[in-house]
Image 1 (spheres, rainbow, N blue to C red):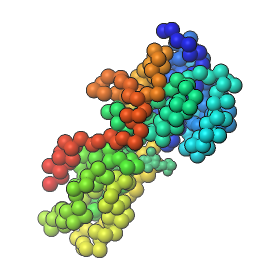
Image 2: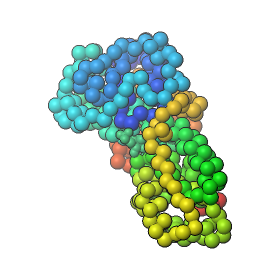
Image 3: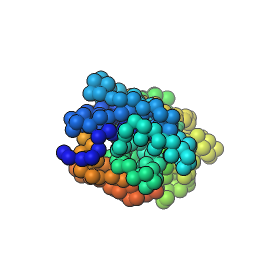
Image 4: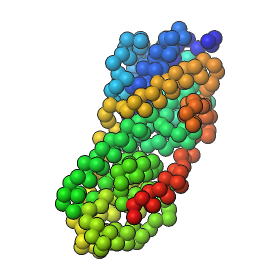
Length: 328
Ligand code: F6P
């Protein structure tokens, strides 16, 4: 594959996600496969600004495909939002001879890279790595499958104790402003109700009437999955409000939090990350730039950052319909 690119920098940025290491491994090994040098930039844009850049070889990414987190560390960088910060970052890339970038992260990371590309013209590609699955242009982001499986495993465990004590649990899952983890862990975990930011139809009264109806028909244990970005309020708030009007249920709250970000990636995330890593390097070498790699109906695709940034990944209304039918 002919290309003027000779040294590629790779970094992870924003919240970590299981499968980021598998993506790093794929980027490094594909780069080397095409006779390019690959450098790891530590702590995302922070490391670019501070010149924390290390050469990576095929062996430096051995034994990481199964590990959660990111060996390159990650950060959210305020300095990179400034022109001065980006200028320092570019100087450091020049010093190290890096002439192309692969960023692994979420929409904040893409926005930074988009502006950087516009200012300095450096070829740049992103791999979507976030548990939130909130990026349009890809059916799945790296980390989402693992996080959702973690949430389902936790919900199953909570179900055991809920059933034993006849309790109602409000379980809060991550996702920022997206309800992907909630809707699919809720369906898979058999939740009686799933509250997501994208659902503007369900009111507090409807939710509480549904739970009341369950209580009156002797449904003593129930699980409600709440996305952290829910517009009706988080799990704590909903539980408090419901307890003020209900006396059937013994109510508990579990906030799953950051445990959804860790753990060994599922086979799905490892394969997705591997495919995206290969696609990112091959895309770069064929001249793709200012784009995000995505997967659409099983195929690798490239979408311009302008189609991704500030757009949302809609939730299929079919998922909401299924959740409703199955929770009677
Ligand atoms: O974007 C990933 C994510 O885990 C979100 O689901 C969550 O809202 C946020 O990051 C938490 O961020 P932090 O780790 O900075 O608390």
